[in-house]
Length: 217
Image (cartoon, rainbow, N blue to C red; front, side, top):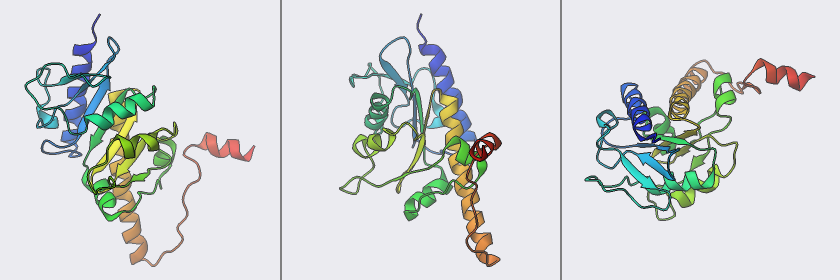
């Protein structure tokens, strides 16, 4: 039995949540999900906004790069989406957005610190992936090697945006939300620390009480 309609509805719901949270406006960014019924992915095409995703405009792309007939142009990010799925079998969904706080850090060339217990537990580290050697958007050649480490579940693209991956669209979306929240918190932390003359502020070592207790055992 095909899972296409089910995955389309999940992608539409995730895209609208991302739009409603203002993590992505206009027609930028992208999100995709692996299909279980065939060796292919479902992905938002180029020129379609997150809030305009529908069953009729989402594209099916086979893992060998073949695109099912569609009136829309394929996403400019299609290559790195396929590259991530080929790199790690545990990646079943990807949310890529241009959320403003995180992209601000990315455009400044500053890696977002994981400074809350939640970001340490759920993400651990947010690598900053530079632009392509010619100064263009990151491609699978820059992105896939970073995610070849199974411990990496999210990253920030310099002058571009963010990537969250997971076993489902919602799990990848949660990461996109945590990235943006962490960037916002990090900025406020740095501003308040400067105003109050605080230096050398410590960071939590563990994201859970269980992790801290296990280290003491």
